[in-house]
Length: 295
Image (cartoon, helix red, strand yellow):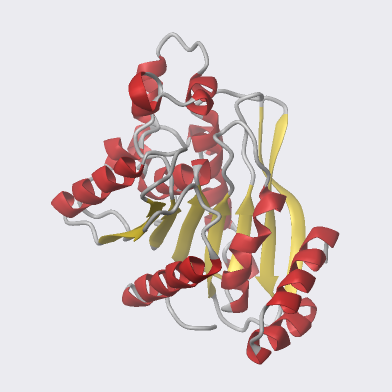
């Protein structure tokens, strides 16, 4: 087990009062195989990697969480989001933790392309890692929330998976979006302009076209997987209205979805009592779509 994960588990064991959860933490090392820094794609001489947390005692395919870190497409690491993985590991799921090309390596749409390739990696290797390809849940926070939406919503016809051509895109079973960007164009200028979005598009001559191409709002249509959006209505980093707009568009298209509003919530870092409410909503939403319960 790597040092960062070991420290995270020690902290969780020390702060949670539940005997059942503490028992799970003590048994984690025997239950899970941690395979770090698996290369899933190589683009621009950059090795995009993921970490796989696989149940060693699995006798049948299990659901998998594919988690994508945030950081405004300009920063962040997969190692910094272990706290977001732990609830799913405690539920007994397999987990894939994804990194991707940041703006300093490649401008948009590289991050979107990479995450689609990571999804393909999960599909290709599902059988050998006890992953149920019919129970893939994609999630992420902030820019990772945006990338979870694009990964679950963008069809092959968009052509954004050509960096890893040769295998079909698996169908995502559900998306859990934590305060993700839904309309990139909205952040490039005007009152909602955000520096991180401008940096991700850089000086591309067709930046507005690329921004539309990587905006989840452009891909709303019937038949999408269920979507849970979690967003604080006082978020200063990603406008709360973006999630409201996506929620309304999904409703209009007949896509099962829910917007869980964290009252007074900012950009993540919700208080413990609000986090408990959020995860209760997550488990309820997943259960409603056949993805609930401990494994």
